[in-house]
Image (cartoon, rainbow, N blue to C red; front, side):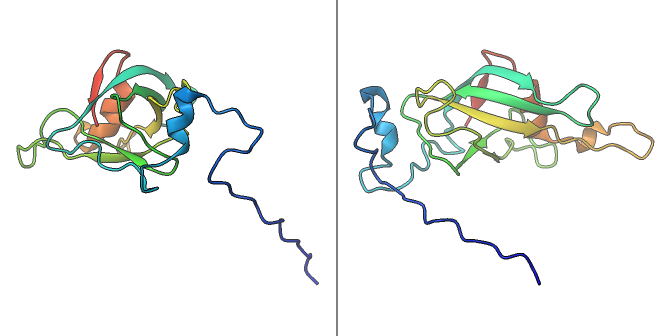
Length: 163
């Protein structure tokens, strides 16, 4: 016979903080979605992106590990809100060499809670793996590297990013 398993007890989901919780005015707006209870969407458009500022970037894996994964922290523009499970659209600078047009947005999963990294609701973390193609002889082909992932993996504090 197989091992029996037990179902976990049902989880309690609250739309409001527990009665014994203290909600600070600075974070109260973060407990709600919009006036209709919907997710915050489309703060900016690809044709008119908003500017986020890089607060910092740190390598997440050892130097001898294959590849490169970076933790990028951005300060969002005032009024830009998100909730868990959403993604952030990032537009890398430059033009697509194939068609001569501005680069298209790329989506990155948000690695932060709605409170942000500084608990102010105005910061966001992305964990980005640098997309690169390595030939069988071990050389990297720059023509096949990810445009946006390489941009994000190289940003510096103070840089602006179109989102």
